[in-house]
Image: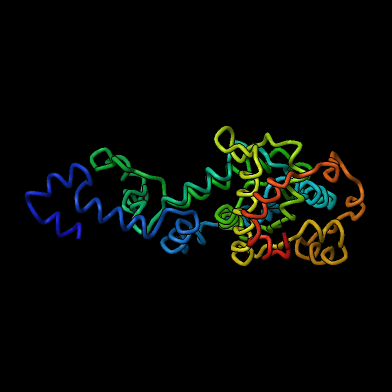
Length: 324
């Protein structure tokens, strides 16, 4: 309908003032259809340059096998799992490093712009020269959008993460990883894209009990200062979003879905499976040594708090066997 109106000369100028040109609208629609999310962007990168990226992968990059512990919000046992992996003596696991700054979220979000049309490959540096002498004439070419080739973009992401998380500990540990309470589906795909050999633990806890433990804090953030988690509403929404994300991510990244209750109260049910998945041996006595824990049983939830969490999380919680 809109394209027909653009063909009316008397309306075209008016439409272009408020909507832009017809060509711009068409290209915008194409970008919307093929991009706009991390998973779509990563898919486009693989479709367009997958073969090239495989050719540029190095032995050093393939040697990294990080462990990423994702928890559906706070107070769900992520620190306990972090300590267990530490006990192997092989992995150094960071704890929500610079979490409030959204480091991994911001890095992953860069891929949401990648579509079937953008970036334009003719703007890559390799399109301008085949040997050094070509660079001498580059000043006579249209270079307004001159861009490093895609493999350098990918390598820069790995280099950033490894400089921050591996370099400080590489003299003492052979592998690294981190635990987070903010990361979901797209972030798991992003990290799996960078590190195909990575292992993921997706950790959930009954949202009522998780909030009961969180209630004495109620001052933390998903991202500082824009996404505070001060209320049962914000806590439940965060838990619900991540829990649903975990169900989507489990198969895509080959993750281990772990319930807090199984690990703490029924460890025999999951212990061997978890060790086999991570390919490490952990010290089981870590489970019995509490560090910095609170006493959530003493904290009571109001009827309103219970109603809020049940209303937001009920159906997602059922998928994990939690009958709220």
